[in-house]
Image 1 (cartoon, helix red, strand yellow):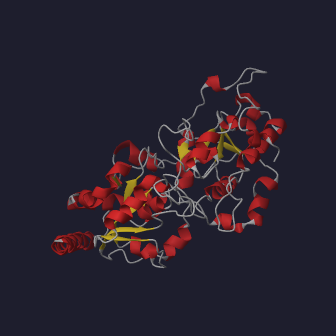
Image 2 (cartoon, rainbow, N blue to C red):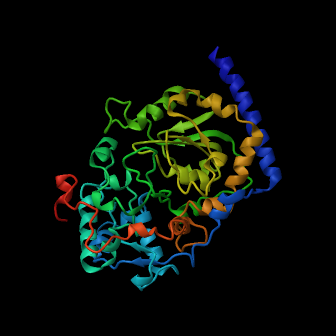
Image 3 (cartoon, rainbow, N blue to C red):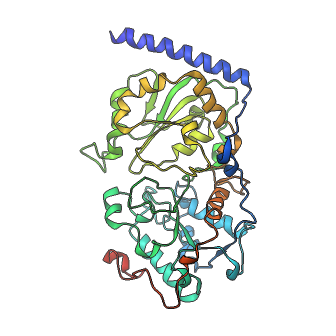
Amino acid sequence: MNFWKWGFVGIFFYAFVFTIGAVELGRNQHTERISGSAGDVLEDDPVGRLKVFVYELPSKYNKKILQKDPRCLTHMFAAEIFMHRFLLSSPVRTLNPEEADWFYSPVYTTCDLTPSGHPLPFKSPQMMRSAIQLISSNWPYWNRTEGADHFFVTPHDFGACFHYQEEKAIERGIPPLLQRATLVQTFGQRNHVCLKDGSIIIPPYAPPQKMHTHLIPEKTPRSIFVYFRGLFHDVGNDPEGGYYARGARAAVWENFKDNPLFDISTDHPTTYYEDMQQAVFCLCPLGWAPWSPRLVEAVVFGCIPVIIADDIVLPFADAIPWEDIGVFVNEEDVAQLDTILTSIAPEVILRKQRLLANPSMKQAMLFPQPAKPGDAFHQVLNGLARKLPHDRTVFLKPGEKVLNWTSGPVGDLKPW
């Protein structure tokens, strides 16, 4: 019975791919502009709409940390480093803090790495607190608003909660001193203590130059229906199973490891980027956190992202029409993935592919060196510009205090 079932599915799949591939070859990579205000926002130029003052902090907060471990330049949390470099030479930067709309503190909180390359978050709150104490003591601008016109880049797994395990992140919460600041972070999940109102959600860092060197001819047919490479179980950190990815990745493996429509494995081949460019759908399930670089890779390589992460808040959601370019599958519906994806009409898939082929869509997901118009750096600035002008109520009266400098976990209050 299974033989005939998968035989039928296989015939359907190859007929489907042939149809899609033929249309792709015939359309010569036509693109489609995002309609309405979202398209306008994506192409906005922030220059002239805001001015940013960059605090010159002692190098122990940034450059010395990077010198100690250059791996920070290539991991998925590297946006904090490249955002700093970008702002130093950006035309929005002002050297006169009196005319600044926003203040930025370059603190590299994800650059303390384990031998395997994972960020250690344990000292990050102390580091951030130390930097805030410094700027509040040496400049008057923090004290005017207690951080309401300041922004920080916090690309940890759970943002400024500074922990890679969700229950520990929730227990710690966002440090009290950051409660009024704007956080620029990769983590986004609705109704979560680690996402405060007004945060700007950004894509994780993926190396643009490396991805560019793996581009294949645009007319290559997409002969893989569903593609995924990564962990399905994290035995080391979740030996009993069911907790990692809330069981969603395990369900993908158990249900589709033998399905010919699904090219899924824990192996990470050297042709990973090339394979994504030959796939119709790329799975983007949650792991320990709801986000991962797969989302960036899928968009850049024109593979329709299949987002499996309930309540996720996606990068630059006011500019990128995620509902139009992706497919959302509830975690509880993973067992029906094959039915869900094969039921999507070819014309719907083709429209998603045309939108994904739009260069502005790809550019918005990347932090290139040097920066380019419309890239992720500019989308962050656009997000900050849209928050202006600041409401007058954010400016405190002389001597007024709102934040509690002595609250929070005892360990986070220790000197750094």
